[in-house]
Length: 114
Length: 114
Image (tube, rainbow over all chains, first blue to last red):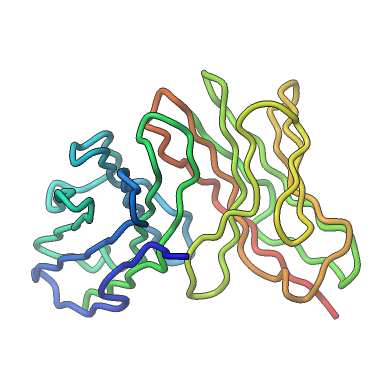
């Protein structure tokens, strides 16, 4: 069965650079969630989209922005990167933003900021 | 608002022994509760979930959890630990008043001794 695809899997950036993380949900899934997991920490919700509209926003810095495109894939754009942005970024997809359907997680993108 | 507390950042058991991972939640509306497992450098895999109905929920790999509203608990158990169960386990809560995003606990690392 198709799973959530995230690219790239690993990314190394310098401070103050920008990064773009991509998420391709499971086919027919219309909802995408982004989570950030710092070293040794639990995943923290960043932002979510349902049918290409932002549905909720968590502890996402103003330096970050995201969107969901017409094909339902999503991109997380991160600017002015800081050392503290080094983390594992997960994308999860589900069907139906207004219901408690299971969120399927991608393998994550490991971002390292030097 | 919702929150999750996992008691014990590390739990160590012998192979074949009972596994008990504790999770307490707080929610102002009926909660949806989940247990996820994360192996090193991998994504999150759903073990089981409680939404409505039967309070004893069975999941994959022999795990089960019981929703106890009076105790606001959702503890995870497995009768007999296997070496392959060694991983990080996250309890999470979600609710209809918050776009169904997942709020994770701080995680419990399960160690299985031979």
